[in-house]
Amino acid sequence: MSMTFDTKIAVVLRNDLLMWQRLNVTAFMVGGLAGHQPDIVGEPYEDGSGNLYLPMVIQPILIFEADTDELRNVYERAMSRAVKLAIYTEELFATSNDIDNRAVVKAVVAEDLNLAGIALHDHKKTVDKILKGLSLHR
Image 1 (cartoon, rainbow, N blue to C red):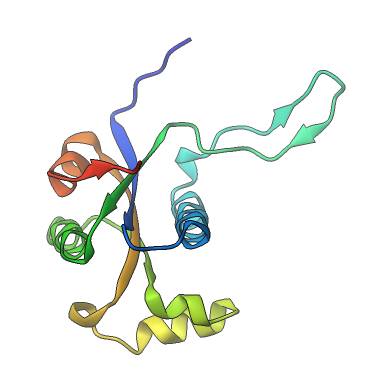
Image 2 (tube, rainbow, N blue to C red):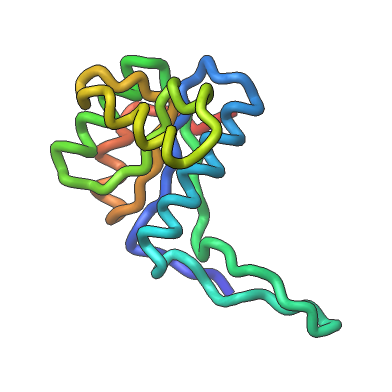
């Protein structure tokens, strides 16, 4: 059964990140989206033996890549449309807990954020406008 969605989930990663960083950034940000927008999370899974598993996001997540300037443009477009974002900044690679994570982001004004990634979920048309010109991650 195929489902269509009125919304789109997208992750945009800076294209110079190492592979482990790309995976880490994606996991952290999608967790933030799922925690803030519970309607994107489905029901728990159960296998044929009756074992229960945690639910997952119910729709595809598109992963894009961008250089530093393109990532900044995505950020500005999203902010101008009041789209709620999950962000990951370069400084977060040097921290080891949520308290320090929030502190290093708070220490930087918006225009100086050194973005490594952005995740967003909104109406398809809005997300498409925000991501215009970007390529899917390869």
